[in-house]
Length: 65
Image (cartoon, rainbow, N blue to C red; front, side):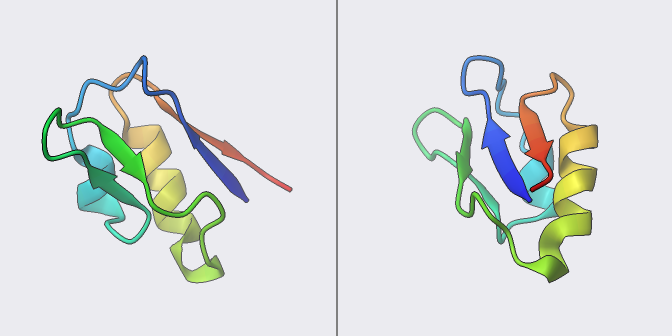
């Protein structure tokens, strides 16, 4: 699995951070998402998928390898 974030679409809602803080964080200055792990561990993958589907603007993409 590979995760990508479109910084241009992100509105800083923080939903992804609430769902999976081990993979997503927020920039303190601007509030936009920071990707901590482009290739998350197996145990985090279900939560990453939930974060992607829960993003209100579709800024998170999940690509299967």
